[in-house]
Length: 344
Ligand code: FA5
Image 1 (cartoon, rainbow, N blue to C red):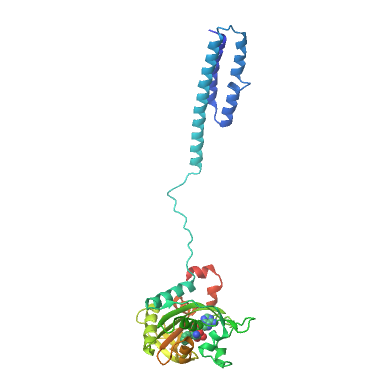
Image 2 (image 1 turned 90 degrees about the vertical axis):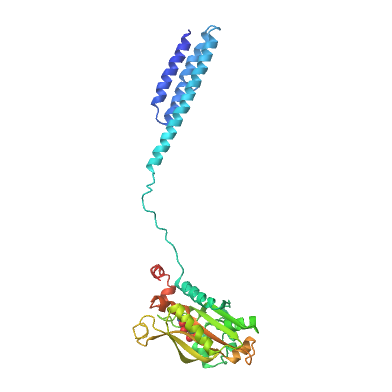
């Protein structure tokens, strides 16, 4: 047998032994260059083929091919084993402990004003009132004139107004102008609507008053609507909003757009009427203004006051939320204090 065949057989043994020692991809690459590369040991052996008899050459060629096939297969196997080991050790290093408690994701929640608004809208909605959207930027006429505020009448000063540069365009001071929009949209059909939204007043900001706040207005117009209907609606509202068994009381008041007009109180939710700090020892908490829609306002809305009657009421959402959630400063609502927002 040719020496070269022996050398090739020896090369195979050596190469397999060396391959078994490699532990990294870089080492296997170096191994390949060393044994099978262009300048490697196999090439060096095959350089001797030229000196052989022609009869010996085929056997050497065949052996060289077999050795190459064996070594390449061994290399592939080695690399696959190494990849597997590398993956296993990486997985072990970044292993997940499935018994650890998970991280609590921080959930946001509705702003207290929105919570209050949704609660009020849900209670009144279930009594048949539908939400009607009306603008925050109003004309002087809708905010005052059509609501029976006479020009230059001191009643206008009940609500300090933000004016704009445009003549007679103002930010609404209450949701009541929505009454006229709703009436003009639906007259002469009977209606039951609620008008929720922002209002603006040019007032000093205090623990009880903001420049921007929300109101919800209610308006019902029909053929036989009486003061008793107003009372029943508000008692039902107070019982759902502040708890079963609540009492309400009416105090006479004045609004240009209702006649008669009342302020409505609910018995104190904290002391149930016996007197405490929250109700300033009166036993009662003021919750809203209300009354029977003034005939002039009905007519301005397109309803004949001889045929139709109606009631209206308006409440401040933040003030309701303050009572219900025990908040003692209205400024907290819009100060973006995350601790407050998480608490209420
Ligand atoms: C009105 O605005 C009437 N439009 C309510 C009304 C509607 C009466 C329909 C009759 C019929 P008043 O000015 O009292 O009324 O305001 C109503 C409520 O808005 C108050 O009870 C209070 O809860 C809230 N409110 C008024 N001003 C402020 C303010 N600066 N900051 C926070 N809430 C306010």
